[in-house]
Length: 331
Image 1 (cartoon, rainbow, N blue to C red):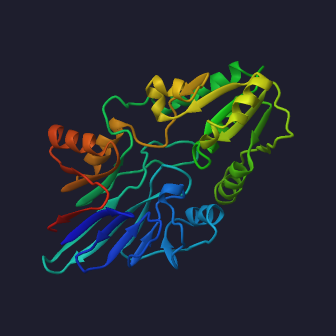
Image 2 (image 1 turned 120 degrees about the vertical axis):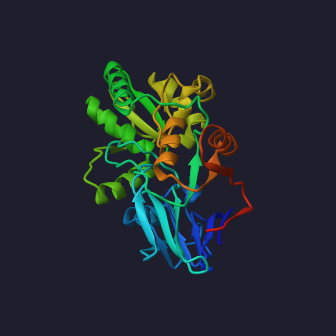
């Protein structure tokens, strides 16, 4: 019997009684796993060892006070998740001696099937049980092709070269993508905050990439041609509005939520672009078809909507996985 729980992270109790604990703030299972180094998937207290990529461990070390030792496990295979630098999906293989069969459980974490920049998109593998996210799990979220999106942003950077621009993006992931696109457009100066610069340095040390960014601080004068990348969570702070007004800068937002016109108004952006680190609705459907599981659990985002869609429109059994809910599968 395999049990999947959404508690502090995702717990998978295997037929032999061992517990794999993924993306928990305080991992307490037999095997700790971390899919990537975004704060909502990262420990608050480091376990003794953690199954993750070397890059995720290094990023965790600069985002938390204590660092976990990256490890491997013979029953776990890490697969490129395509979400952010270092992100991995987790494929667990376990022997069910009672039924004399092998069970394969796939936990995607946050996932994108698109090849983007220096990231390889997730490639589905066969599994009996799939635990998948659904950030954009409703049909209205279908993104344009990646090359088209990137070309649109590069064109915008080129068209606004006579003005400074302020770009809002997650410190890990989106911020680095924005920098790469600004580089491609040949903008005169690329500026980032200390928090983004710290992430840049770790990514640069592990991947064949150089962002070429300079440090930004309160004494820096923002001028024509500059691109300033700020952490997305600072968007509502008064200094951003003050800087925008004093420098006559254009402020841009980058997110899959930009499909919805209200995103522009909620963030008070001058421009918005549909740049996402997650699968859109169609890509999620193709991911499920590629894995071809006996059971799907949906654990983040539009969980009820995507599970209902799968049940109604596809041959797959699907269930939303709410926090503090357990499920049992007879495998």
